[in-house]
Amino acid sequence: MCDKIEHSCEGATRRGFLKVAGSAAILGFAGSFVPGFAYADSLTKAQRDKMSPDDVLTMMKKGNERFLQNTRRNRNSLNEQKASASGQFPAAVLLSCIDSRAPAEVIMDLGIGDVFNTRVAGNIENSDVLGGMEFACQLSGAKVVLVMGHTSCGAIKGAVANAELGNLTGLLAKIKPAVAATTYSGARTADNYDFVDAVARKNVEMTVAGIRKNSPVLAALESKGTIKIAGAMYNLKTGAVEFLA
Picture 1: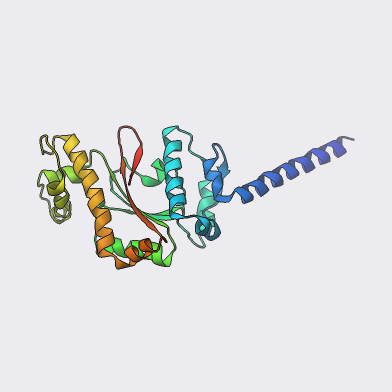
Picture 2: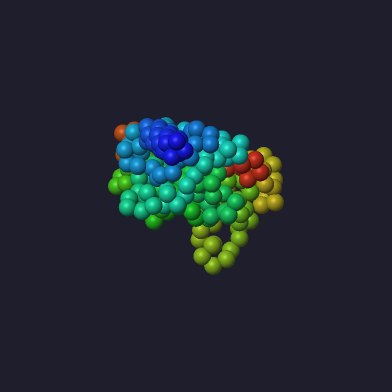
């Protein structure tokens, strides 16, 4: 009798597990929108291809909302690593700053294989960065190019202060056009973080424009609606990502 009960319970447990697993398969990537949902695998090609550029932006926005609410999804990172080992199908390519306090995957609750991420001080665009973006979108199928700056950016502050140091001098020179283009009525100094943040926002806007101008490949994809090129600002104090129009 006990054996029958144990066998029956074991069968019910298995059926319950299969039911959950089946639901996970049906939900697919939508699992990332369900609080507490254990989404184990990396993004698949089929899931990525079904998403529009707006869907991808929504995915990142909702991820940041979960981050702010401390309800990041229940991940199995090892399963994500194993699932993506044989192929990757990221939904977006990000250009963000190297600042240790602004890790894009963490603050937008993204997993292994979800996005390409290029990080360089001041989130500047150059030919190498553009080449990576073109690979990500034209060859790999990413749907969004997102340039993300952040508040209290040291690279922006350095550009405002005309700092000079080895190769950093040339990098900061790429930010200085944003310093000059920023409209601001207060003190235009590196110690005024309101001005620094205004320059950071302008730098994002100019970088987005530079991507469109300097990459005919990406500009053509955007004109066809295949991708979207967008900007964002991350607030170090609040943890919120503001997506720019």
